[in-house]
Amino acid sequence: MRRAAIVSPIRTGVGKYLGSLSSLNAEDLAAIVIKDLVNRTGINPTLIEEVVFAQGYPSGEAPCIGRWAALAADLPLEVSGTQVDRRCGSGVQAIANAAMMVQTGVADVVIAGGAESMSNVEYYTTNMRQGQKGGAVTLHDRLERGRVRSQPAARFGHISGMIETAENLATEYQISREEADAFACRSQARAAAAWSENKFADHLVAIDIPQRKGDPVRFAEDEGVRGDTTLESLGKLRSITGDGVVTAGNASQQNDAAAACLVVAEDRLESLGLTPSAYLVGWAASGCHPATMGIGPVPAVKKLFDRTGLSFSDIDLVELNEAFACQVLAVLKGWGWNDPDKLNVNGSGISLGHPIGATGGRILADMLAELHQREGRYALETMCIGGGQGIAAIFERAA
Image (cartoon, rainbow, N blue to C red; front, top):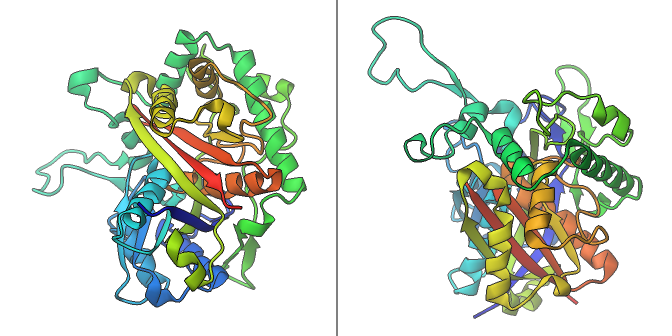
């Protein structure tokens, strides 16, 4: 089976909810990052066979974002596209799907990535198709509703959302508020340091955002990084549930961003003049109880290690997406592993942001840049998924 090479993983900056990128929809962000990827790699667009793109909150305004973005990015009409949704794990799944196409000979060159504009997720109603005879019409916020509807209530009862699942883990694994705040503070400090050291500069896609008046404004940052965060400032925040562990300061953000890479058959790299960044070693997904969805990386990584024969002793770098600080700390206890020198060394979801469909690609781009800087061999990215899942993937640095 052919190896799948990762070429030129890139990402945009991560915009805050209703922040600098809010004037752009997910499909706009996707087209921007695809155009940049084609320009950076110099790939002949006619050689691209598929665009596999992730979106955690897909919209009827731009259905099948992979195809939509391919057309918006002016790729040839013959380039097909598809959409992937595995909630928070969508971006990793898009890369895995593209890799499987390459490994099995279905395609030689695939664009994989993801985009999300949480600022533009719509409100919707479910009772107007056959008309409303009278009374009020309920509009659901898809951001809020998607978290409640992540699993069937008939089987699991009512789960109010991801915060409840995080609090369940904090209780089960005895994670204190102070421990969660300390981890969040470290995440912010590491992200701020990474930016000050220009660690993301080479793979960051700048975006010129049109303005109503005047010249476009260039966006090239992660808006949620708060380098001035302290334990004292975090300690002043109220728990979202009143007496729980989770606060706005130790949970991931709602964000807008896009990320992409080429996934290419190893035996075509030389003829195409492409330089690989890494190779996909393997990936795995696993289910868990929806009420403790945050523990998903534990069974997913176990399955992946069983498949590959690798273990934490082989891994040089780990990024575990920070849905919640207490969730990360619970996973670390579940793994029986915690090495601060390898884990989330440049921050993650709490500081850099969690733009759902783009998160997997954002992590990949940042993680592989750090892996090359350290001259390590293997990097692991993993995350929990609403509805009770985890996903994980291991990449090997290209020499």
